[in-house]
Length: 410
Ligand code: HSE
Image (cartoon, rainbow, N blue to C red; front, top):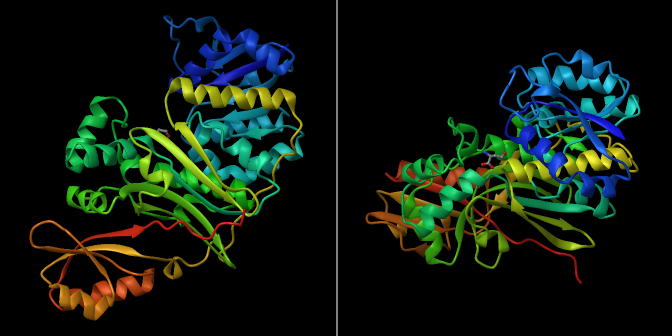
């Protein structure tokens, strides 16, 4: 029987305890032994909790108990989660985590520590909630060169954008709805400003490329500036505006970014609606593989935590080695190239043609000129915007256009 502990009896920790209890026999069949929950670390006493007798307030009993071989870290944040994880790994105990902030900031160091002490550091639940994507990327697709990962990695923002499209409501109304339904955090800035998606694409890129780019170095834009008329303009050409995390390797270049994109209707990502997440992975032999499911919530995320507990018992896979990315990785963002959707006030179509050449005009809101450009680098786009601004144009929106790039032949 493997003795385990959970750190943090919040939404995910509670879901994990419930799943371990409810599916105890199923999990035994997967592990070959029972997973026996021995401790739960929490600062609260929680006398109403069915797990109250397991609660401890200090890490020491867990770290010093030789019977405990695996610990689930569902605390969140960095300070305590980092200190406890280091202590447990140094004691040779495997740690599985749902903590995207910790993995995206300290993953390289924690994986190295796990390797040094002969244990595992697993983080399936940190990205995509219940969607199994880290495991398939690091195991089933590991013989491929991964050329692209593009994903809808945040359920709250996808709900908001879906409502702006289908319900015709503005950003503020859609956000209020998301909060009412309990999807958005009380302080939703990590969702709507792209921070949450940024942490997740950092982890996915590191899993694919073995180089960890800290979130602070990833170009990140959220959805707060998206207008209902932008979403309507996208819909008029069969596209949808989606907040994407993307990690792209093209030739010798690599780009990692989070930004809203115009996603054309021929991409499955355009049709992922509501709070669902989806991650498209492209390998140089497998082509496109798509992962879809619930990216958040107690039960879905607990499913991923327990998958890692089972993997830790079954051992097998080697501990991956991540380097902390140097200054040369990823490629400088100014050379990222894609078509753009732009909307201006204060200029006419002729001015647009003079600056951006051949464009496709869209039906924008009253008094606006909205159009799609050809491929432009960040630098070229900024230059064009500056030129139109000098001519009296007022930029209302700039949204990058997602393109389905080259794929391997079948
Ligand atoms: N707030 C996140 C989301 C939860 O909306 O996807 C999971 O990280």
